[in-house]
View 1 (spheres, rainbow, N blue to C red):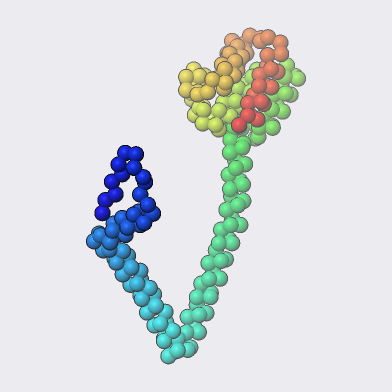
View 2: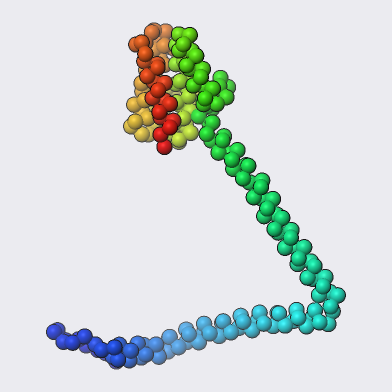
Length: 214
C-alpha cells in the first residue's frame, strides 16, 4: 500500500499510517525474524527450566547431596566476598602509594640530592640564603626538568643535554621558563659567572607556581 501525497494535499491520516505499518510488519522477512527471536527465547527458557527441574529432582532423591551442594555454594559465595574485600583493602593503599610516587616523581632528576619536592625547595632557599648560587641553580634546574618529565612534556635522561630538552619540550609557557632556567644554569654552573641579583629568587617563584598549575 502506498500513500502518495500530492503537493498541497492533506497529510495522511493516522488510520492510513497504521494500515501501512501493519502491511510492512506482515511481510515475510519481519515474520521470520520475529518468529526466530521468539523461538530462541523459548528455547533458552526451556533449557533453564529443565536445569532447575533436574537440580530440584536430584536434591529430592538425594537430600544429603543437596545439602552438601548448598553448603559448597555458600562457602564459595563467602570466599568470593572475602576475595572482593581483600582486593579492595589491598588495592586502595597501593593506589595511594602509586599516587604519592607520581607526586614525588618530579624529584627523579635530582638523583638523590633531595627526597621530595619540599626538601628540594628548602635546599634551594637555603643555598640562596648562603649565596651558594651554584647549588641553588643546579637543584632548581633539575627540579623543573623532573616536573616536565612528570607531565610528559619531556623525557628526562641523565645523558641528555640542555639542548635536547629545549628541542623536545612542548608547551609555550613551560618552554619559556625552561629557557630562562637553562640560561641561568649555564651562566652559573658552566660559565662560572654571576647572574643578575634576584634572578634565581624570581625563577624559584616561577617554578613553584608552575607546580601548582594543572
